[in-house]
Image (cartoon, rainbow, N blue to C red; front, side, top):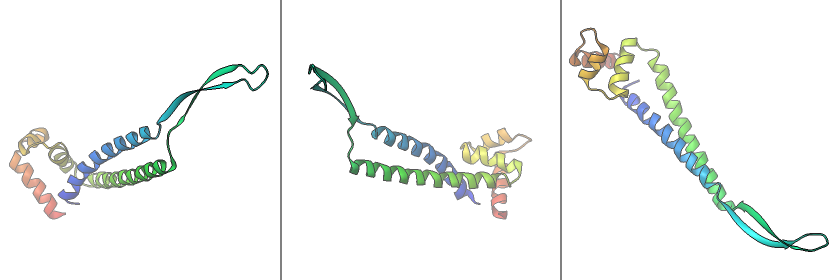
Length: 140
């Protein structure tokens, strides 16, 4: 696991959110309906004229097929991003707690080295935190 994969984790989290929104938008497109009024009569005597309100989906087979394929592709993209998230989170559980905190603050939250050192506490400085992280990734 390296810094590149950690940055992919951030992108994977955003991608999951964006893909979920796109899937919701596609599902909204699937529901176009058409309303109409028609005139008819009673089926039995006396044959009096009546108005009927009808509604139905205004969707043809080609549109439906394309939207289903697009939704399937987006679902696959979301699953891949969730897989990257899961792998990264599993890896995070295997590293020391201090390094988990440093990675969380510096990479995931995007804080500066100085701000990260303040959050870590215990006389840490921005440079000491930076060097600790560099040594950790050299060992891995």
